[in-house]
Amino acid sequence: MSEDRPGRGSRKKRLRCGFSTGTAAVAAAMAALRGIMTGTAPRSIAVRLPSGIYLPVAIAESSVEAGAARVSVIKDGGDDPDITHRAAIGVRVRVLPAASGVAGGVRLVAGPGVGVVTRRGLPVPPGEPAINPVPRRMFADNLCRELEESGVQAVLQKTSGTRENGGRPSAFVAFDPPCVREAAGVVVEVTVEVPKGEELAVHTLNPRLGIVGGISILGTTGIVKPFSNEAYEETIRAALSVAASGGCGTVVLSTGGKSERFAMEVLPDLQAEAFVQVADFFAFAVREARRFGFRRIVHSVFFGKAVKMAQGMEYTHARSGPLDVELLAQIARDRGREDTLCRELASANTARHALEIIEEHGASEIVAAVAAMAVERSVRVAGGDADVRLLLFGYGGGLLADVGS
Image (cartoon, rainbow, N blue to C red):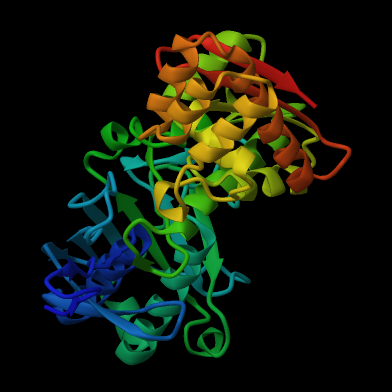
């Protein structure tokens, strides 16, 4: 195992990458297609990722019958805290002759545990399986290569020829050239199944986004990077897209589930799609909200995040920079507060500690000033014509400040 050594006497473990649900499903489909040809699915298979590199993926279970095969892969999220880590991603694959005039390609079918899109605003149209565009292209690319290597006619001879998929939601992805020439008359039907998908989906944003019946098959690179900013940004972007498509005039950007719940109590008339959890991605979320056409933006935060916003930090995680308690002390000085309060604030250990000091001294104007500065920073990021409001909550849920631009 390789290690980073930032200093003498210290060791920092390098976090392990994993692979996406999309890569898992594609690997299973490739192994199933090869199993149809040879009678036995391989124990592992190399998936071509969008970057062009090949990633070996282990096969967990497989069975081959006349003209069809079932294969499952255990999704490996690496060291990322992913709800789908160790979930079984299964497929049932059949190779069918294409109907007259239909190009060769892959028919992706939503099996049990795979979500179906019901709302506009996502990269997949309503009524289709929640299998994102990059995994769809990965299916077409990798299964096309399998067909080329196996020989199309030989594959067709081993299939039953039926075209029924049980009426489940499906989507078709055509093969790209030059595979079109090699597999013009072939459709590979892939039914993707996740045995515990509905249970897992409850712990994701799928219900909020209008994806019903299970999880999404995701991936942009095929690789899962631990604590990836890109993955969280993509989630924020998807939620904002759904809110915009749903006609929300206002978007509420909360730092998490707790602050979102408090904001919902203050703003009960807004529809659920208007509330988007953005964690520490303050500036990114504001810019994306503007890009989707939102002019009215509400922030729902606790005191520590508000101070970070007031400092001008675009990313408010603790590792992005220390909390500037001297800023709080300066605000107190500017408002004529006693030296004792200023010194206590300048030596506060945490945002919570600083807020306790402020409350002990009855200095609520400091909290209001922080909120106003945070709103000003957000307006700068969003653009001068933005209507920005900030709801600043105490750690117990009380509303400490409600400031607008």
